[in-house]
Every structure is written in structure tokens, then in C-alpha cells.
Length: 317
Image (tube, rainbow, N blue to C red; front, side, top):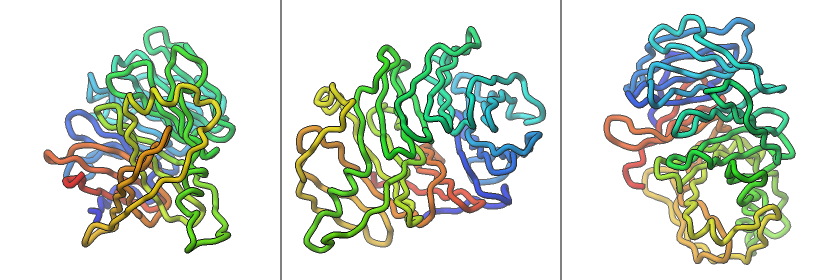
């Protein structure tokens, strides 16, 4: 069961981030920004002028008081200790920004927008160093991989999850969520069943850089959350990803953990197959995922269509 953080927002929460010191920031509709303690206590609040939705918030790892926030087509830099006024701002995207991500060296800031583009902002020179355009629909989320300052993962409403290296203009591989969902549903128990597209709304990468999770919705507001292991062995198998790999079906044995709605599966891996390690039936459309340590334990924080934050402990994972 998830623990709920309440009392901060009055509108749906759109984004989350955590600082090295345990603070959590959340952005919501209408320009609303909140700071939280690790116990879920609201600590600070501000509202941006213009009331553009706060679509992404991001702490600086090297300076935990610095907080980046995207609202509309603008990126603002704030001091979390006061949250009053912007220290700096950038305007590099032509359409509404959906997600921000800093690389480990904090010299590059990625911003994904509604056009499907990912802008890479050089923070030292304050200019765009690269523009990545591969998603055919809205790019909803982007995340640099820890320990790999030139590598990032993106996902979008084109049902694609992509792994990028900034030294190349094309993704290293592409996973099609609709193909994966179709394979899961092809069974004697569900002949001819119609499937809604699996739209990817959020992606989060673990500190090792090889495990990432994706929040997807298939049209029924089921709020499915999937975790992948992107090991170097799998990456080597998919060096030509511009065309999604055609894969054979796999035999799957699944089980449900007692007292919860968390599902895990054991699979026979086939060539090029990237399989979810964990699936959580959240029950609401997922707006944002955040993997962070709270009081010594790893947790997944989920923002959805409600005004509260759901916290799932991962002690058993």
C-alpha cells in the first residue's frame, strides 16, 4: 500500500524531484510549486506569474539549494530556501516543456517539449549545444543516466522509449511499448482483444544507471509502472535500434506479492528483449515517477491526477 502526502497542493501534481539533503519538490497545475520534508511535511510554496503549469522541477546535486523549474516554455532557477523570485531563467524551447534533466557533471540540462524535441542546454555558455528530434509525438520525459554524462533516456506519447548518446545523432536503441503490450496480451484467454496504445508519461533512472522505470497509460487510467534493467549486455545486443527489434514471444511466469498490488515476473530472455522487472498497478494516470531514499530506504514517489503524492517502499526489490 502507498503512503499519501497531502496538504500541499489543491490541483493535480505534475512533477517531482528530490535533493541530496532529502527535500522533495513538486510542481502542479496553475503555476504551483511546493517543497516537502522527507516525512511529507509541506515546507514552502510559490506560484509563478502567468499561471503556466509547473511541468518539471529539478534540484542541483552539487548545490541542493538550487532548484530548476519549467513552466510553459521557460526554465527558472530558484533558491529553495525562499522560493521567492528567480535567480535566472532560460527560454530555449519553442513549445511547452514537459521535463528537465541534469547530467552528473551539471554542465548540461536537457529539456523535452511538446514538439517531440529534446534541447540540450550548455549551462556554462548558456546556449543550446544539441537538439535531439526522433519522437514523432510529444516527448513527455527525459533523464540523463547517472555516471554517464553523455547518455540519456527519453519516452513519449509515440509509445517509444529511447536510449541516447550525445555523441551520436540517433538513439542507441528504441523500445516500442505497444509491441510489448501486444505480446503480453496474445494468449488463448484473450483472442482478438482490442488494445489501446501504451502512452509513456514518465521515466526515471536508478543511481546505477542501468535500471530505469517508465510510467505508462493504455487509455483506461490503469497507471501501470514498469521497471527495466538496461545492462551493457543488452545494449550490445541492440546496436542498430532505429528500427524496433522484432522479437520472439517469451514464456512468462508471474506472481502477485501478498497484501499488495505489486507484480513481478520471471522470463526466458530472448534476443533483444527488454522485460519489466516490476509492475505496480497504481490505479491513476501517472504524471511523474521519482526514485529516492527516504529514511534510509528506497522508495518510488508517484504524482498522478490527484493533489497528493503516493509513496511506494521498495524494501523487497
